Length: 503
Ligand code: ADP
Ligand code: MG
Image 1: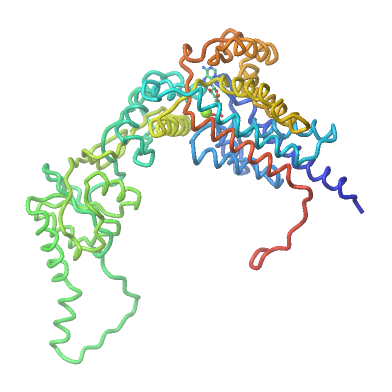
Image 2: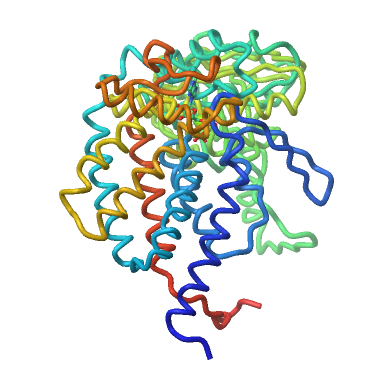
């Protein structure tokens, strides 16, 4: 039988070791000079990426402690779109440093208390380092894509990102990305509108230039009948009524109903399939039809054309306005809808599907961070400069607390330095020299200094144009410290009985 302390040490050790293993996996990808990972699945599928979130999502992880770390990275990704590698690396270091404290006989509860206090002080200090985001949006985009495949077209890509975010007024959800292989990255563009991967039902249908459009969910297709249905009629009149309700007359009525709202023609976008008879009747009224439009496209169209998605043709109350055209992008036909609302589409071009996938991931990160900076309004210098500054503050303040908790706060401070150290190390420079140089520069009050990845020395990150959203760094500190604390508080791992329904 294991003693209590022994059990605790084992569970903690296992969790810390598992978490460290995850952190070590992604560590070498951190920063502008980070390496890529090639991931291969059982079926031979290959992904080459530098993106921490993508790597973590693809890892086949079984250990519960490691899973908690991945969960923290997912939170970071969903809230800030970036900073996942930093979160995992920081959490790994916090856990590794707590191990040293345990060896000195400090109780996990004291470590957790110290970490909690340190996280609070660090994030408070972080706020004082921030400046207003507006002038730095392009720099934020550039910082997010350094080290990614997009770097070669840095200037163009960052302008596109800022344009898209400004069009969408910072609403990430209103930015849509369309990837079309063929062409070069520099052929990518951004416009206010939506691209729908559909064609109009009738090949010769062409939309009315005045661009009125109606969005309908259902009610334009044949009702499904089971095979071999027999219908009995009591009288000839009943048969006539049935024919009227199910036959061509129904479509004539529906076509009239719709045409009434589109007197000068226009377009009907339908979520469901549209009956061909109805489509041809509408075509006579100069109304084009596009059907089986995915729900997300319907929502975007609704924002863009400023008209609701009506449930059925009976509910229609009016049409929305926009410019609607059929266009060929690459070798595919699309319906391109332009309007004045905040909805924005980025059309990305690239040589192959594989490079385009990595391009898309890079854009998603960049668009995400720029929209966070735009919406939350504050940015800080990157390259781990803020981490050095926070570490310094913690060392200065640790003595206020005193006792053993002070040691936990100092361990937290040291952990923070892992970010700039790793950025320098991955660029092929000495992490210790970099940290020592940064500490003395920061002691002089130059709080924007970070690692110079080119020369191996240090430099002013604001002059180097390395900026990131304040919220991104704050969330990274909070997620990393919360997950470390949760893991440190676990003193035993027990097998759980499967729940009903689970095998
Ligand atoms: P994450 O998944 O944490 O975003 P990245 O690999 O994208 O990991 O690296 C992000 C880190 O690299 C941030 O700390 C960022 O400030 C830093 N960084 C980006 N560009 C530079 C640069 N030119 N010089 C130094 N640090 C940089
Ligand atoms: Mg990043």
